[in-house]
Image 1 (cartoon, rainbow, N blue to C red):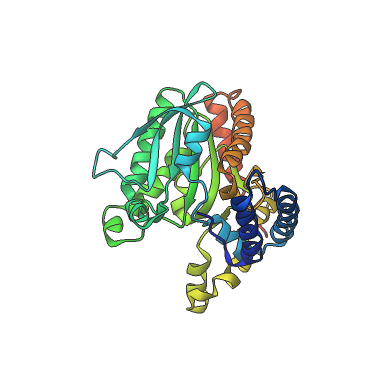
Image 2: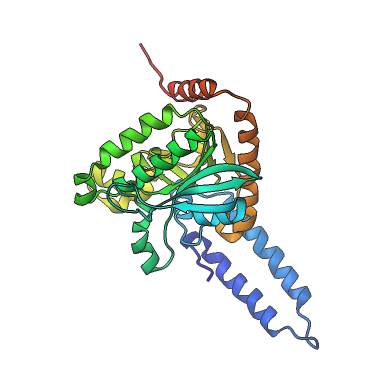
Length: 317
């Protein structure tokens, strides 16, 4: 089902006309010429809209309910997927999927946030917000990957770690902090991709990598725009203003020069319009960076990761 965001409303009527003409086309009545003209017009209009998106509109795209999630990328990029469940302590966390697969024939570990699309799956996946057991499951898979010398791919798409009472009682902050420490010392390649929302410590807990990339319409920030607005102005509805202040888009983050390594292009209109093509673009970048990192020793990988995150600190006297 096609879902339009507010700023895409000008496309609704055009797309509806195109669908109607296709439906009414028969062997005796050919509307192909009219369809081609409307498609060209829609393509130009879409290009105009998406060339002038503000930060809040890009945040809406990053949250689009049809946007590809981790399991979609796994299906289109990896083979021989085997999912691992549970943290051997409390329970499994469906908000984080973790397991092993093959990337172009090479065994690897894959970890990523998973959201749902309908009400039932959203509740099951806890809206992509992991509990501490999710981060402990992820760490277990990372440690297994290191034991067997496997590269690790992580896909980030969460508004943040789950802030519920139960999560705090089970050590949410400790679980995130432990992941940050342990990921910094992994002696295997770690490649991180922000595919949708990269929110706060909930994102960073699986985002300490040798290479960090962002999809073109993803966002990455210390807090969601609504959360920021609630703190600054005591009004969560001022999310659009907060988004402008946070400078959270891939373009903004890339301009910092030290946080991410690449911005991955998306199909026209966003990854949700063509998930297969989006996965193809992503695979190309994953392969490029993996080929580079495979040339480094374990100690060199740790040092490169250390220097990468060290370079994000700026001191002024």
